[in-house]
Image (tube, rainbow, N blue to C red; front, top):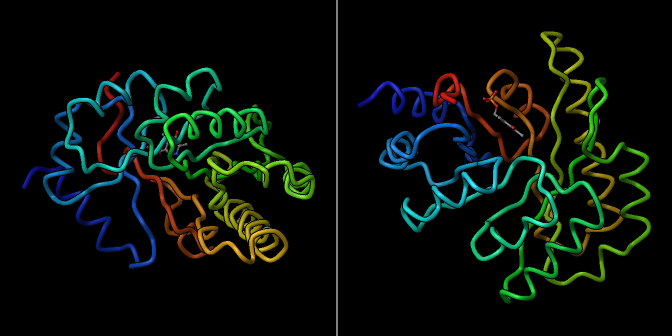
Length: 223
Ligand SMILES: *Cc1c(COP(=O)(O)O)cnc(C)c1O
């Protein structure tokens, strides 16, 4: 086994069954993804459209590709034919574009709504009050091809585990509020995407179902 494969398997052993591992392979070469694939990894996360497409074209076709970064509406068309999950939907405009492209390809495209729970200022994601307003407004529910199946967040970049835990807990509360008020009849709405290399144990504690781990598997990013 290669060192990469050993790291991956060690992490997998620590993850409970109900949690899925997204191997965040951005900035790593195709050979690294193939190594992970060879020991059974099937979900990969990328954050740039061009890089994702180049990898998708040559790597095995049973890989589930997740887009985890900020997505520009005008690039949705390039990934719409094959993407398994878009993690960071941060506007109605983007959701509508995903819906339009899903319709074109006659496939539902699962999406997560990005909520901004971190202390830090950030450019992307709905603040909690905006998230509530977005769901209460209801325009999202008219879309039949962009399918909201959960929420996603990033914690503050800090060593303060108490703070990170508070942020994940807030995301968890918002998820449960959404589930009970707007998605109680939609069993697909069940995904919580939070937790990265530094904080995934806290994420699992607070109900994450999708952890996104990059550097702990692949090492430092190469370009
Ligand atoms: C890069 C990235 C990750 C993975 O981060 P690591 O610290 O390398 O595990 C997770 N989520 C998002 C949105 C990212 O951009």
